[in-house]
Image (cartoon, rainbow, N blue to C red):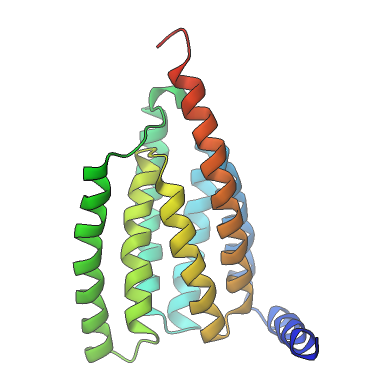
Length: 210
């Protein structure tokens, strides 16, 4: 109990000392992931803003260079996702949810693992970046999971559960307590997103219009 109390105190102190960009990134990030779990195209604007602020914070405050690059990638993917979900028509029905095949899963891991090893080696060898190997793994698979979100693949949520769980440890290790709590919340929302998108997919597949 004493350890839990000490940990809660440390989190409260860290939260009180946060830079404004961190607080804004967290709040906008929560709005994004909740709307994404609901399948709403309006998740993308707050997501874009959150990632832009997060990129600045992770680079300047926590020296997680790979993660900062990831956030900049998210900004670009946010605009692509917003367009792809609506196809310029303003209707989410333009791009229905689909399930991944075994070949697609193999493709994700076949691309992800080699890239994670390459990025991990590079940043561990040539930069002072912190937690290079784990940061590289989460970065690469977060990129791939983001693409799956853009393409509305149901299993994107399974990859997010894995990535966000690892981010909980990564941010705790760096003392980024609020981001750690955000990742814990993201993990729970990803579980909810999986079940919600699965219901939506089954509903659209049984629709009389299809």
